[in-house]
Figure 1 (spheres, rainbow, N blue to C red):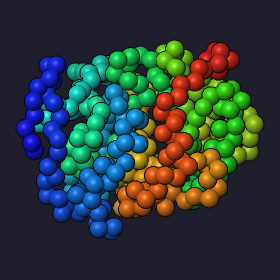
Figure 2 (cartoon, rainbow, N blue to C red):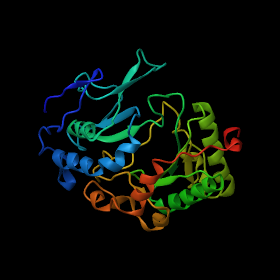
Figure 3 (cartoon, rainbow, N blue to C red):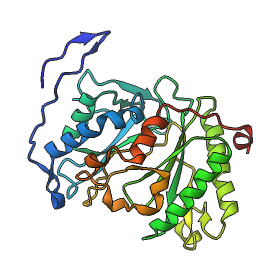
Figure 4 (tube, one colour):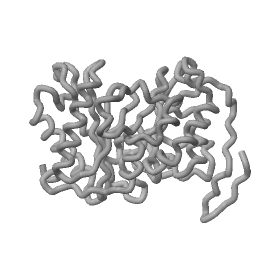
Amino acid sequence: MTATTAYGGRMRAPDRVEVTRPDKLLWPDHGITKQTYVDYLAAVAELALPWLRDRPLTLVRAPDGVGGERYFQKAASSYTPAWIPRVTIPAPSAKRDVDFLVCNDAQTLAWIGNQAALELHPAPVRRDRLDRPDLLVVDIDPPDDAFDAAVEVAALVLDVLDEFGIGAGVKTTGGKGLHVVAPIERRHDQAELRRAAARLTGIVTERRPDAVTDAFRKAGRQGRVMLDPSRNGTGATIVAPYSPRARPSATVSFPIGREQLGNVSPEGFTVATVPALLDAPGPRRWAALAGERSRLPVELVRG
């Protein structure tokens, strides 16, 4: 790693991050090495960073690749370079506060990749106002092998958001589901945002009770798509757009355009394929969406 210099009380990021053990296989079934993964992160950095910047970041580490042990890491490790910023979040249920990493530049992204952190899960808040979320998230969880059902429900969620004048985007989760994400003005605390998200999912459920449910337990879903409004607030996270998943398939959480919803398969978005897809409608929409902020209407916030 090249030398760093201090500025403003913090070390300056190096020009280049050295990749250690670059030939180490992280996704063996696809021949994806650590170097390939770091190169992938460099390819998506410009589009991914607006969704990571200044957000507390939880990582899924897989030091020996997807075939080995995988674990969530919230607290920054003791060997985290001084040039990577952190944010401290009080943890009422823990013995001490947690210092989260913050990923604001391509060098930090490369360092994260070199640590074999295969998933990036930012919080829907920024470090300067941890009490004011700026993302409204709806997690769309379909029954097994029912991606078409998730697509249908995502379109309905987007319709309802349109009716409220709230701009949003949709992305795959890297698994079988979808996320609808709406950047919002930082006017509401976590309780108000959760209430708005619950009201939103309630409206969708009321319109299609045959297809949608908010039942958390699978036994109560009866084959319907579950809408989960719980991924809102400081303690919540959502897998970042362009983040891979620590699964043998090497799938990626990928932004898709609304017009593409009925013509995509989550398995088509992988570490190997995504760099060639960055000019598609989904990435273009999410690049614009990163700069948007909608105001939540009173009727959603009050329930």
